[in-house]
Image 1 (spheres, rainbow, N blue to C red):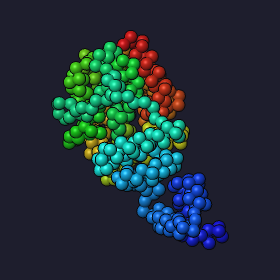
Image 2 (cartoon, helix red, strand yellow):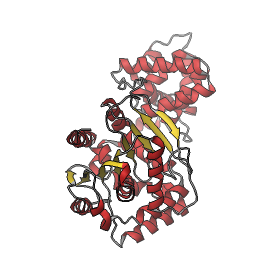
Image 3 (cartoon, rainbow, N blue to C red):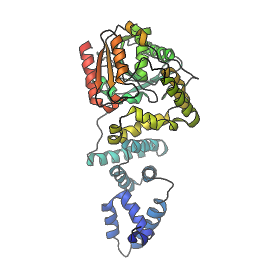
Length: 411
């Protein structure tokens, strides 16, 4: 131990926490400007607030920061809210967590308080050069959230102008995630004039979780009734991983509903050895919940370089998987593990784009090649620096590839 550390008292330890949370400039200003009148007060709050409370091991600093935002918001202590909000942003607290804290406050502190809190936070973000991109609520951009009328109910989101002339597009997500996997791509496609629908598969997100196990035919039938209820078919189907499996089934069993097909990071058939892998995954979830597999899922979904360079994106995906309903996940694993469209792909008659990631161990390039070889006229594109969630790892390349495919279709 450093000899200086041995001589630290509670004030010194409090100063250390105070600096870590509020930054050196603010703390130096408070301490250096102390007078005989308020020095004892500064000493008091540094010892007791910043050491005894902020130094307690029960909560980490990011959690304490968010609690302070909620409390100062509820008490309308706006000067203190601004101080701690700026410090939280500069300290690297994810904006998504700050937003969720303010959203929660809208219910428990009131809408006027939330309105003020959002305004202050936006002003801070603007000053820090961190203002998020626009998300207008105009007709062609606003996301409308619904459920299917038929059972089991599926949660869905639709965007794009009512008079949009582009081909309708359905986006279908991967196992353990939800429709928000497509947020950025959906906004882009809607801005290009396409009506866009994304949905949560049964057992996922906001959709119903009927008793399992599920079959791939059930997932395909869910998708078919979804398209029919939307009434905009035939659609361009963009499916990644599990979503691509469902898309193959639609093209084989309900060809009248599919105008074109995009199959990303998916397969039409697993080798026999995969059955044991899925059985082991099911057993782990049944015994330990989603936390028992989340690390291995992140390793399959993202390459090592991406995990190192974009921990924010990985943490967001991790949170999604952890929030997944274990029963729904297990039930869906039975369907995904038994996918078997390979011998019927020659029946597909719609234009098809197959996307693969060179770093994808969950759906290796060979699986994509097998699909492309069997689907008449299919195109195959391989992203060199992408693993399983290619739309997240290589969003620009994914979007450009899809745009090019749609342009060639003249839709």
